[in-house]
Image 1 (cartoon, rainbow, N blue to C red):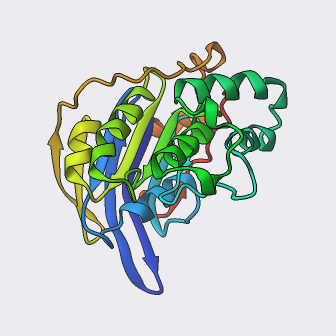
Image 2: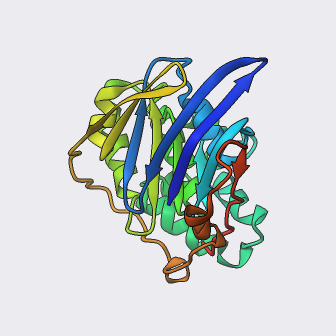
Length: 249
């Protein structure tokens, strides 16, 4: 699903990522934990294409969804409009109403569909942002600090919510400073410090209890042309990036 080899990134001459290598398989949740400034968010932004890499390789098999740390909901749009907007950008309006209602109901925010972000709690904003990301049925879901701004009592629910979004055809990479949260959400936890992965730990997260829509039949078996990249990644000394597949979700 995702393969990184020796990924490097510099900002104004300073190294932020120093040869990061990792893989995430289908149906797997991998957590990135570490202090602020350790490179977690930068790594996610490189995977989704918001930042370019200065060295190494990134290969993604399928489409990618990104959930921002501050949710980045449009303040002038309602919950339903925020989620619908993602579909309109992909010109999939023919399935908008049904798909949006399905997700909002399963995330227990259908009754909030006509509210604006200013009238939502932190947890409700988080669910709206997740619905907006999932509505496109990404193969790989990236989450940057998904519990930021939430109190401790809500982190268990967020962990279960994210676990429930994973399937045999969807994987997840979560960046968080909260190691206890990742112990409840992730299968493996990678510890980052100073732009490198310093340790990996296996984990046995609690099973999820919140049901979400499974990927559509259209998504089943869909493999982007990027899958060949796993066998063909060469010239590792030069920066390399595989373009993301569009997906059918």
